[in-house]
Image 1 (cartoon, one colour):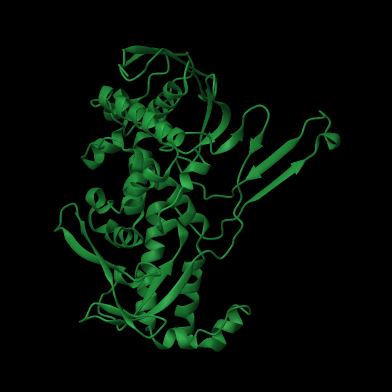
Image 2 (image 1 turned 90 degrees about the vertical axis):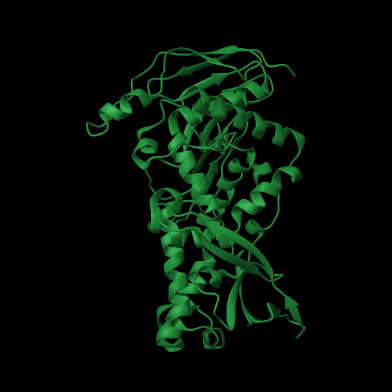
Length: 401
């Protein structure tokens, strides 16, 4: 289909301010909230209005243009956050922050988020895949038009963002899952306590904890401690944390003063600046919704369409399992449950480090999943593998987009 140049109309609203320290270099990067912008990827004009809180209302004549406009708006307001999340999810933080990003990058590369995000589009339905592609077009059009007006963070770190790909939008759901499904890290922490202090101390701290004697006999406290530290470092770099929860409740219309149903959803995510959420209103002949989005992901994650409201909560289900794997490093095999030796699969990763040498690491996996311990050491007779649906091919994003 031939694309014609169209114009996005932008309503007048408040003017964003900048701190004194970044004023001179950041002044040009303030998004324009009034006037018009020529957007080459649109099929028809799109109107964007902002209310007094800066929340954008986008109205398009077709669904593809609506998601192109959403990508444009996300990039205009949150392009650095989007790029940082992309780097966190692909294990490429060390490229911009140097040694401080290595431990996090190794663990994320071991999990293999990028590998599965690249294969997921083939599994999605045509509508979802089309919306993802349209969204990426909108992001890239903003990056093209504003190449000389990028946020000041890019200038301070000395790099420019790469074009946005469909697979990049599929990383956010995995990062969200990583934040909300942390039981493997709890199991690691318990194992380290048992290894250093014994099962008696672990039972005193956590009466529900099972014995870790057999588990810790095969893995040293130092190795477990290094893995716990790497996981903690990854959480810090990705803005994740423990102690999160959520709730969601509904009141029927007969029990409210307005005779309308009320749904209250609170995901209990960590406070970050900027927030993980971005409020937005989207409207086209085939898609109308208002609510909270995630920069980098098309669609409305939490919201309503005037008839139906939706949200999500963390069920805190144990969906991650750790396995102690017996290895034969010289042969490149592991001992399977039937007693036979099976070959490890190996994926080579290269981590570029700002101001340092490129790091080459081999990510090994059994049929159960990747060896987490490879993030800290390959010289082990026993290793830990992780089984988790989020690090397997799937259609996670189709539920959100």
